[in-house]
View 1: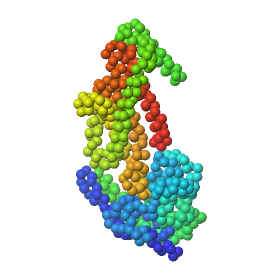
View 2: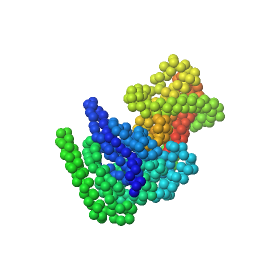
View 3: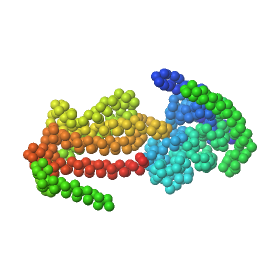
View 4: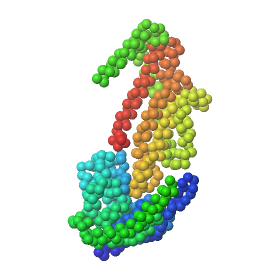
Length: 277
Length: 244
C-alpha cells in the first residue's frame, strides 16, 4: 500500500464565486468556500453532498472546464489550469455526439491528439469491448439505452487513458437496476486499470459502495465537512457489500452528517417558497 | 391507389382546362393541348439555352449566398453580443420582399450579370444566414464542454468539431428555404432587371399574347423547384440518422 500514499490530485483552497444578475440586480453566490482535498494514486474517492453543495462545480474546476476564484489544483505537484490528457470526464448526461457512431465517439479523444487512425481504431474497439458493447460499434447513441450510452461515455474516458477519472454523477440518469450493474462493472474496470477516481454522487449507498474514502460536503457554500474512510475489503463485486456491518456503520455515520445539511436546506427552500407565495 | 388518385385528379383538372380553352377565348386561356405543343416546340427551340442561362444565374447567386450565409451565420451565432446587436436587422431584412429591392439593386449594381446575381443572392442569403446562426447559437453547451475536456482548444476546433456538425439540420433547413427563394429571385431578376434566360421567353411571349407559349415558358420554374427540393430531401435523409 506504499504507493497509495503518493498524492495524485491535490485540491487546495478552492473557492468559487458566481456573479449572478437577476432582474437587473447583481449579486454574488459563494458556491465553494475553500475546498482542500487529496486523491492518492489508484485511490477511489467519492464526493457526496446535498444539492447546492457545489459538487459538480468542484469537478468542473478539477477538469479545467471552470476557473476557480481562488485556490489551486495540482496533479503530481504540477499546478494545472485547463483541461489536459491527464484527466478525463464521464458526464452525467453522457455527453455523446449524436452524429457520431459509438466507435467515433469513443475514438474522439485520440482523434483530437492526432493519434494514427489504425491505432486509435484498435484502442477504441478494445475499450468498447471492455465496457461490454462489442457489436454496437456502428450504432448511433440514440439507438442505445441510457445505461449503454453511459458505457460509451466510460469507454471514451478510458480511451483518453487519463491518470485521473472524473465522474460527475455518471449513473444518476440511469434506472436503479442498471445502475447497480454499472457500479459493479465500474469496480471491476477500476481494479484492472487502477486509475485515480473522483466520483461525484448524491447517492449515499453508491458513494460508500465504490470508494476508499467518502468526502462529505456541506451545503451552500460547499465546504468539506468530513472525510470518512471506507475500510471494506476490495473486489467488492465478489461479496454482498451492503450486508456487511461495516457498510451499515459507515453509511449511518455519513447519513447523520448529511441529514443536518439536508434538513437545513429543506427549511431554507420552504422559507424561500413561502416568501415567494 | 396513390397513383390512381393522382391520375383522376389530373384528368379532371386538365380535362376542364382543355374544355375551357376550346370553348373560351384561346388568347386568355389556351387549351392544355396547345400548351403541351408549345412546350415541345420550345423544348427543341430556345428553352435549353434559356434554362441554362437561368441556372447559371441561380448557381452563382445561391452559392455566394450559401458560402457567406454559413460563414457569417457561424460567427454571429458564436458571439452573443453580435447576435443581440444584429438579429433585429436580420429579421427585418428576411421579411423584406426581394422584389421591393429591385430598383435599388438596379441603381447600385446596374442590370448586368452582377445586378441579377445580387437579386438572387439577397433572396437566398437571409433564410440561410438566420437558420445557420440559430443553429450555431443553440449548440448544446454540454457537447462544447465535452470537446474542451478532451482537449479541443481553439475556437475553430470547437466550431469544426461541434458547432458545425450540430448545426447541420439547421443548415439544411436554411438551404431548403434559400433555394426556394433563390428560384423566385432568379425569376424576378430575369423579368424585372434585365431580360435573360427564362425571363426573356416569359416576357417576349407575354407581350405578344402568345399565351400557350407563355405558360409553356413558365412551366420549368415549378419543375425546377420540385427537382431541387427532392435533391435536398435526399441529402437530409443522410443526416436524419441522428437528427430525429
